[in-house]
Image (cartoon, rainbow, N blue to C red; front, side, top):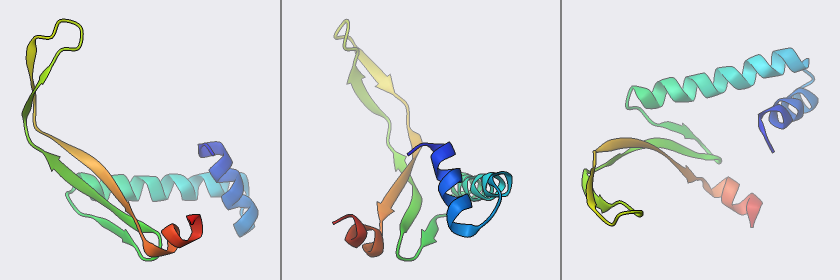
Length: 90
């Protein structure tokens, strides 16, 4: 499922027009992105938790040359599925 499919599914299940559903989906994505960029986590009970994981700086190897290279520290978005989502999939 891609973003357009998701918008179509939201429009069908909620009775909204596709443009209203697109605004709703974009609003949810923007709210999650803004919350994560502020360092907060987003908990959706029964669905899952979006959070930010801090990765330490490390040393890796260039796959082409084999030379060591430094990988800088970074923040990575992370998602942990909730019980309701796990049960629905299994």
